[in-house]
Length: 162
Image 1 (tube, rainbow, N blue to C red):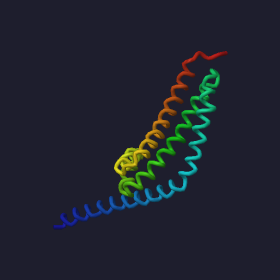
Image 2: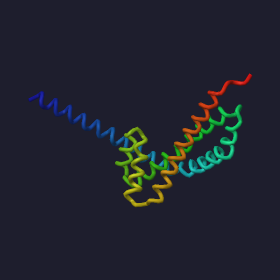
Image 3: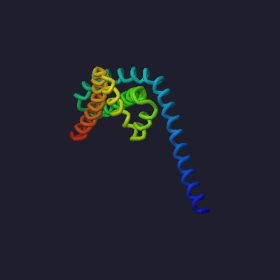
Image 4: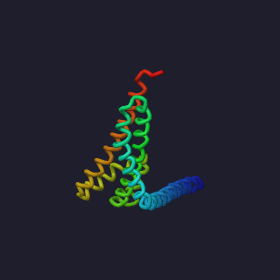
């Protein structure tokens, strides 16, 4: 009989521990969403500036052999600004569409789970133009990252000038 109470007590302790972890994660998600709501307008401006610099400054600079590595690295680094902005937008959309539970699931799936959940939320809502805009934003981010890596690889492949 004592073993039964010990095992039931162990299970209860385990359940309470898991519930505590879920509560802490939910609080972190709510705080992350609050933070994202306040930071997103700034990230949006930074993304606009980064994309403008990439298109008007760094892409033409990549045509210059000596500056190619710098331009590729800068485009690659700028893609992370775009990626952070896209992820923050997806976090906000995911929270709007699925609430804390859906956002928590998206964050637990390696953090990137909020992106497909945001797409699903927009699809189920029927806001097709928002789906297209978010898809374009994610594709621009990935294209900038791949382009920056490709330019850096091309710069390394060239024989160095002495």
